[in-house]
Length: 264
Image (cartoon, rainbow, N blue to C red; front, side, top):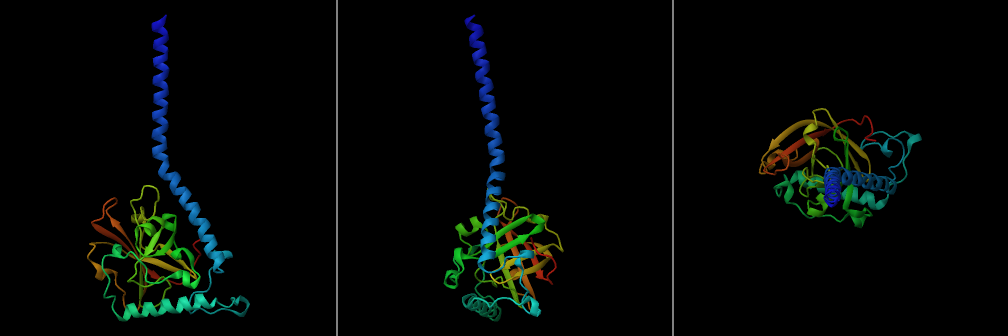
């Protein structure tokens, strides 16, 4: 009789241990998806606050007419914030300077840790200059200035020695992000992107539309392939390659197009 009770106890213990192992395995498998979902909800909330703060709310992402477009009298926009206008003019100046100086200080995109402009002085908090939306990857991430560890944990980063994400002729804004983070997708699925895909940049002023025109794999030292190109308005997405390694760079070149549909 005692042996029978011991046998039942041993079987119950084995069952409990098996269930614990199964649950632990499920937790390990589901943890990345759960944390990425939490991250996506945080980004959605912060993006809504960003749009509200800078008057970008409303239908179609609150998209304002892009620079140079005509605005009908019935669609007159409120007067711009003087500080934001000052920031915009400063970024235009810096973009011109980068073009005229041929980006002489540009090196490996992941080597720029600190921004050279303090956005908070202009009323832009959290070092976030805008948001990047890539429908093909179902991705929305903040754009932060400076490629330091903390910023790259939070979203895509703008490289200091490249054009700022405000558009314009003779610009090439380089945005880098991780693709190997276990808890956030970031640029993990960048190889899904195809020629013709649309990419959206929403800054403190407007939403700019770009289209993928080229996909490349380059060496970290191939900086000349990331430079401003005469007469073009470009966004370049950069991440480590191959997946979970970093000895190459995967590059997605995007060129400005007429705005069609909002990123939503």
